[in-house]
Structure formats: C-alpha cells, structure tokens
Length: 336
Image (tube, rainbow, N blue to C red; front, side, top):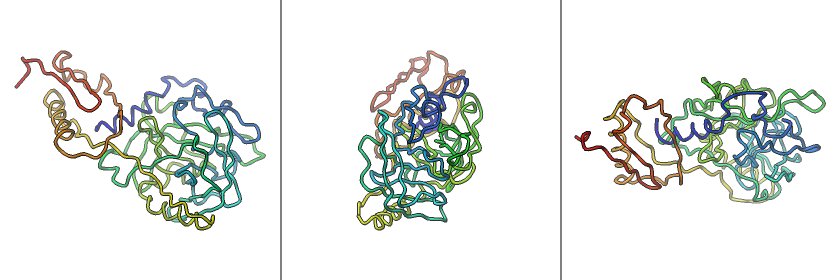
C-alpha cells in the first residue's frame, strides 16, 4: 500500500473510538439534530470534532435532498434530484455556533450525472470552509477501492414527522468510479461506526476522504450507497458554476479546486528484508532523482506493528522520516 493510501486510512482510523456505546460520538451536533429554529452546539465528543465541517450545510429543514456542501466561496454542490432551488436558503454554522443564512440566487444541474450547483447571493463568510475534490488523475496517486471514507448524514424526515435519523458521521469504504460506492467496512472499529444503507433524504450529503485532517469531497449521495464521483465531473461542475452565475446575474469566474496529491510511492512488493529495502531504495530514487509533483506538507502515516512483525528482526534496521528526506541505517553484519 502506498504511503498516501496508508495516510488516508490512518486519518480516519486514528479518530475512531475503539468501542461503540450509545453512538454519541457519531453525532455532529449535541443531541443529534440541528435546526435553525432551535440550534444546538457542535458535539465536542464527536469523532470528527477536530475536522472543519463548517462548509457542510446541515439538512436543517428536513426536506428531501437538501444536503449541500461549499465548493467555492459562493457555490454549493448537491444532488440534481433534490428540491433545493432559487428562492430557498441554506444554513452554514461557524465553529463558534454563529448561524449564517445564505439565499440561493442561481442554479444549474445535470440530471444525467445527478449533480446540481447552486449559487449564493454573495461570497460566504471566510470562517466557513470550502472543500476540494480529487484530481482527475487521482488513480496515479491513490487507490480509491476500499479506502476508508465517511459520509455526513442529515435529518431525513420532512417537517411534522418524528425524527428518526440524526445528523451524524458514518464510516464506510469508498468504491469504484465513475460512481463512488459507500460500502459497509469490515473489522472493528470501522464496522461499529457505519450506518448503511443510506436513507431517503440523505441525497446531496457528501462522501468524503480525510487528507491531512481536511475533508476532501468524493461524491454527493444519489442512491442508497452510491453517488456521482466529483473527480470525474470537474469540467462539468465548472460549466454549471458558470451557468448558475448567469442566472444569478454575476460572473465570479470561480472554479472547483482539486487537492494536490503527493508523489506516488512504490508499494512493498516482496515480504521481508529485501522487499522493504527495495521499497526504500525506490522511494529515495523517486524523491531525489526523478522530478515529482508537489507533496502535501506534513504528510503523516503509520505502519501498524502487525503489518511487518516477523519480517525484520527488531534490531536490524532503523528508519526515521524527516521533513523532506528519509534516514536509515543497516547494521554492518546485515549489509550486502
């Protein structure tokens, strides 16, 4: 597994509680459900509490398909089959709990891909995050299949009905493209924090990866466990941004932003000492000889002890990752 793949999985796994009690850690808001009439603060014990979710607009009205996520300073992405339209408003909540009401003044959608872009009346406050998507060549850097991801759920009941689904973060596995699949993960604790299948009213809510602690959009929910992959639709989304601007009567020239991924890392192809040494040699070569794209600053990853246990004696190799290089030593008796 490449370092970036490992990093993405670790970003989620290291945040998940080891045990599932009453599920409170799933809830993004204190008490589970948020609405504009009686808003509740963010849940400080949520497993995603340290991730900036301010650019995700909670499904606060309870109407189907109202999930919306900010992708530029003035545009949100949601599902085409939902009812969010010009003349309605979305809510964004700052980290301090301040509620922003943003009117929708422009809209463009693609019914085939089931993607809709809405334009707001002005740039959203700078304290609200906007999110990046994967680049079109993501497969050169990471393997999407079976990558740890999460899904933000909304309140799926229309007004006047009993609330059965809270706004919470559900853990899953990303699947294939051009549809991003959200499948049930195997193994604890991931399986404890999954809430599948998705429910009616979850449409438009985001599937996400975590990279360096930041939410990166994979898709918006379309069906019970899948949605259109945004990386495959960047050009179409930019066209929709322009069309939504036209309806709104302005021209922002905004476009969706893709995240810069680290240089791909060669996998460990052989178990044991020589396989690891070959991987390190390849990594050093790619880092210092071949030109590489910009890397993500401060990329973090871990290799669990049981992934290499038994392959290398404990005292045979020592490696340390520094900011921009790798240092390792091999005892003299092991050199070839």
